[in-house]
Image (cartoon, rainbow, N blue to C red; front, side, top):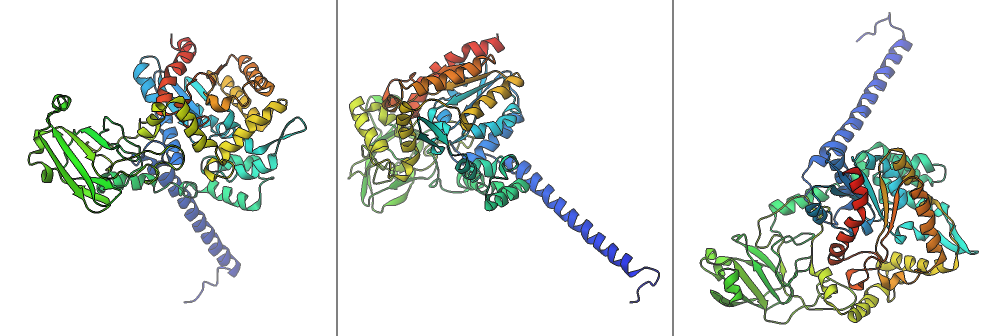
Length: 522
């Protein structure tokens, strides 16, 4: 093929380069558009069936989008770290105060004041009428503070480097963090944050399959794999992983053709007692009793018609383990502290219709927590030492709690001086003041066993005094609930309340907010 002699070689080459440039830009634009539309918009339209305390980053972003796309007549947003998540029960609050305000969480595990500082615009866009920050001593990032010359020295270099590698920075605010600290970050972190700033697929890949896997498990599998038990709860109680006690008495609202039970030991012998209704159970008049031995350990099929010919004739079943019982430590329910016997494990929606609503911020009651309340105070204190204190300096799962515990001891010998994480709280306060959104900080309850380490320190008095002075100058409120829960059995660890503890604290929490809510919603 001959070239057109009227077109110069330079023009021809320029035209080709221009076409390549346009095509490349178009492809890049299409990739960016597809990335945003699919991973930031369409992906979060997928049904969220994840359960409480699972996939925290996915659930936080999903919840944020849900809040930003809806409005309530009056909305109170509770924000903070896992301390906030474990301190109150919004579902219970909403049942009681549904006419005054709607309580919602804007929270995830390990939320530091700096995290909340970067989220403040997203929180404002979530349509709050009142923002409540449940705050705790442990939130202040003590890993970066060292007692020196009578005060705490803040290691900002270490803080900048390590915060850039945390999930919140990588997943939720990489662009903002990179913009603020790019001069101080190592090259590898800069490259990582830059990539995550450009592509949502890079940010969200850490949790991308979580909701998909849960959906598949809920709809297409046997219910033998799950995060939290959601079936009918035995009146004797049940562990969050579905393990019963020696006896489990259930009202079977849905008699499926086949259920599943897990036996830890081979040749587990079970006794089944079927009752017509609750009255016959109370009168101890079963319509059928039988014993069955499951020869192999692991998951076993449970077919009701193999046990009783007419399933419609009963509504209550009692399952009792007659053979040797496994223990909670043996089945990995607990690792330290007081052990106790368990029975069998039930499938996900045992004796109940599959309920796959969004439970990502709805906490349930399980024997994991309830058992602590049943102990005597002396037994609990002994159990607490074994679980939370003994060898905590060398146990990886307790390293941060140990660090915070040591910090509580250290504050007794230093004077209060503000630092970056403390100042973040003041900046958050200023932001909501400027945007005319009422802002309340509540210092969450602490376990009296560990609160005593710094209860009377001058540092703590000055910390609260400085915080309170700043808030009150802006018409905001500080409420100190550190000692609001005095029963140590309501705490799982130094700062997290059990379900029963949160239920107890709910009324204290809501009553303290009544003045703030009534001012906005008379």
